[in-house]
Image (cartoon, rainbow, N blue to C red; front, side, top):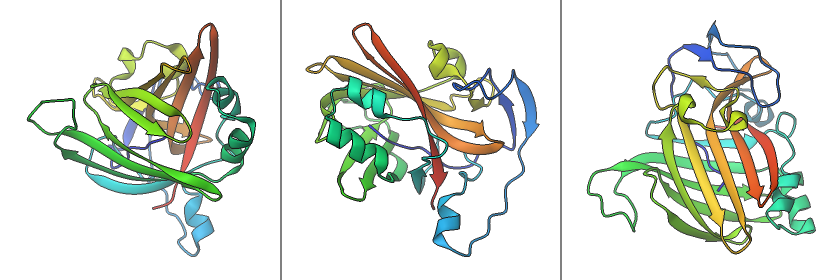
Length: 234
């Protein structure tokens, strides 16, 4: 359930609302200048913000979770019932996401004939087993099983910022008017009793444009919010 969608956005962006951490002000117009990044070593490349991108395009990219800029995931993992040592391992590890995004035939149970956007991803971290996911962005529920979260029913679809009905999930996005430039992913673990809702897109973080996910984990009356910020790898 940890995925990414990446590729090019027009240069002028409008900031909608404040980000989940309250670091940004109200809506404003801002011109984005593409950064020039030194390419002399891998460490420099791993710390780059994502290049100018739009959410939907055929593309293959890799990103790493920024430990410095991201919120802690541990309270959310605890609410999902993930064991102490696994939580610590995930939170301490450098998580890399390798993602391929393309248009293709939808996976079952969908019987649609037309192409849909597909996102195939592999998440890896030193010392932990990798996980893979094949996602179709067509709002069709599908089951996915992995060693971290067990069996969940997940679905995802493109949305506008105005369609996000949760203040935390809606906060901080860079978007294009009425374009569906965000992706909402919902995963439900019926056995453990939790629901994870994520919105993926781009935000300005410390004056740099970054790929981010706002995440809400809910179980009964309990709720945990956190944001994940990514560094572009290549």
